[in-house]
Image (cartoon, rainbow, N blue to C red; front, side, top):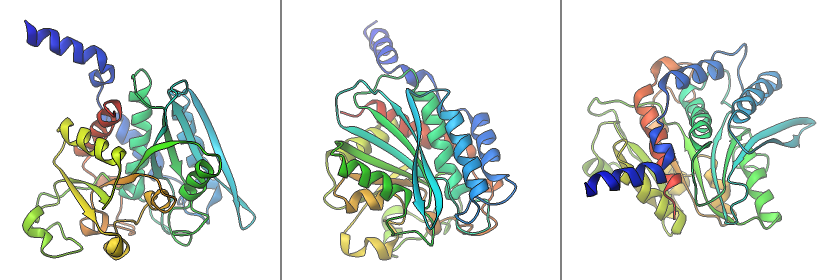
Length: 307
């Protein structure tokens, strides 16, 4: 009887757990994002804006607040797409972000339509959820070259806005390439070859990529994500001096790190596993939708249980 009461308590207090990622919606969203007439790169404003409008249309179905964060680069207007949950919660903000632009003329299914679809599903599942912190979902633009590591990255615009306006941030999660998995031996490589001994040679896990000296947010998010046990999970802590050479800062969390915020990346390890990285072969047909859904489920549970 006690077990039944405990189950009911958890079910009611963690309401969104009754919901799970919808693989049909994931497929539909991936199709809209990748099967475009043209490619969503910085040179194709029409497709970028169509993509931003699509993301906003999904956000508006679920979120308290939805808006564009516009900024000018070389006479063109680019925009992040932002939605907010828990606007009345008087605590520091939690940001979950993913970039929607691609590198060159390719569909970018894993990089990074997979991360954007995670945001869309998170919006759906967070609609009626109770969170301890206000949550902002941000679809960034201009993550890819030639703007990577510049002040024109959408994530830099967002992080710098928080900094300049003294908006408290508990922590940030970059969702970067979460759709590709490979159960074959030798399908997984690493920045340091000896890591194969500790983590194996199969690309069958999701990675929480952190830096040494991470704060309470990263600690709590990582703990709750692992405790959710939705998917095989590993964690890497990389010293600052080799972060760039190892590729651990090759995404939007970089700008939050640089501005002193606590942040991490959720990823399938990118080019250390997926050889379609930045290639025309990065299509939705190469993705493992069921496991991608499990990653999203882990993220939403971690958000709900943050302390």
